[in-house]
Image 1: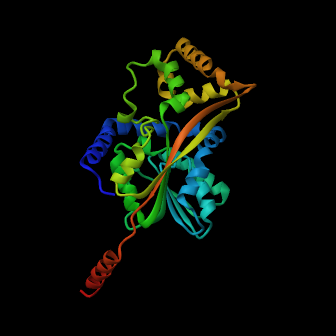
Image 2 (image 1 turned 90 degrees about the vertical axis):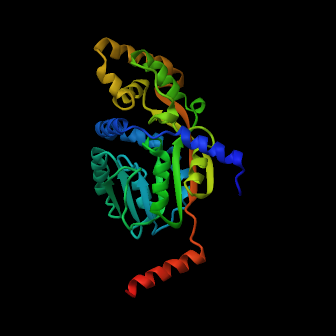
Image 3 (image 1 turned 60 degrees about the horizontal axis):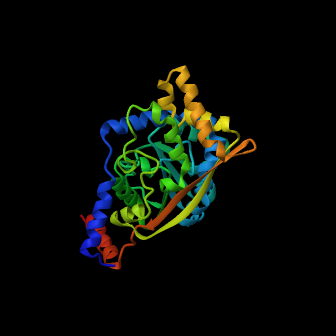
Length: 319
């Protein structure tokens, strides 16, 4: 479909809203995720159960089959790369990429214990990862793209990783009004922050791509076709309110929590408990959430492009 001038201008404004992050912010993010590795491993059953709620939608969008070659970008401690490795079977291959070496060490331990020989993990930035001549049938990222220092650049890199006709599926958190945990957590921690949080679309924020229609438009701008967006309701399940608070202070709020004195730490925990207690039923805490799974394809090469490629290869071999 041909764009009208007005449509092109709107698309340009959307891309401009997702601003690249500074080099200092990138360094902070890398250190932050590396420090979280031990906490993520300790709370693995809780965190992976909650985040994995999008997996059925994500895997369906990827159209996974045995034997596929798949790249999982920003895989953290190994998910969903490990689940995908089981899905594609021994003839398939999975590569997990993450910026955090400690996270990848956990992922490798998990792969060894599961006896998975068809998955490997490599340190790399999803915006700058160079796979050399490797091309993949599928590219996935679950709750990772929001933290890319340059989202349009990351999408362009993902497209280049795919073979022509290959599929991509990305899970990102939806809008604030459908993710109460983010608002309530900020309400609880606000008195202890030096400055208000920046605009989510201009920072490494979980809700950076939550605006309806934003990621599909960015993907089309990056050259993907047949772009589809599917709603993916989620639910964070925690054994108790106390466990929920402890997870927050050891993961998302850990940087702020470490700077506080003993009295302020107790106050922050109480503020979290008050705001999240309405989600408690008995001992268990269930916090609703909402994500988008956006998928697309790298355009397949036309016959003319294939013929041109064959001619170029023939020319090189004849030298």
